[in-house]
Length: 317
Image (cartoon, rainbow, N blue to C red; front, side, top):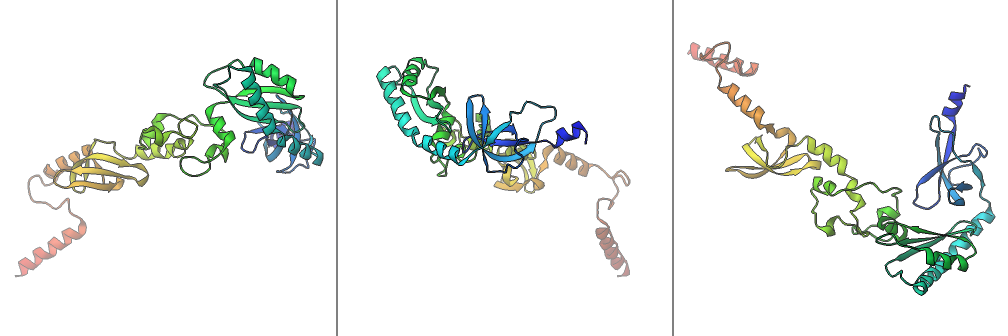
């Protein structure tokens, strides 16, 4: 087997450090017996941590800098992690008390305290409307805890992800159940889908545009390409009318036709006005074969035969 083929067949392990978090890839060639669901110890940019193997995937061609998995997690590691996780609520209470003592942190919300599996690193997650100097509080917390202390500011969507709970739809929040990344969302997505721009209709519990606005956006864009836009004049089985509403996913439009009112038509029943006018002009033109003389060029073969039989019957009489 060539080196290129060996590289192509090399697999890497996808490891997740939180329940609904991003996947990070590591070289597991030193432990080929690992299976999905196993816990492993790895070295990250923020120190040594424990993660769960979620699956395996081929390595990217030419990429060699995958960090190796240090070792599989032992039962002792799992017990240590559980013990330190139980101390997280207490650490968060201490952080809030220290912030109150130091002062000037009234606009800061301290969301969570997170220990790594062996208690050597303690990270406090907080949110604020703007950047804030957290140095004074950090110095106080360093004296309070034996672990290395980090302070990390997170955005409103990450706050909702950490806290969990229910969304406006009545279901558990998408960000805390299955979303591992936040997609860019714009007000245009709501407009394309015909959703009311009322803030209560398009804003999530985090105060930002709802993540679900992106779910069907591409389908709406593709569906609208095949349908006429609002206010466009269009030919229908009831005559020419103006499009007053579009239902992209149903592949229909609502058209107002004079003397007929509002009617809903499927896309295949619509005729572009330019094409309809061209057909009408062509229908008024004389036959290119017979001129102004009577002809049956536009009739179907069955209709011509019926006319011939009628003519023969008249001649017999």
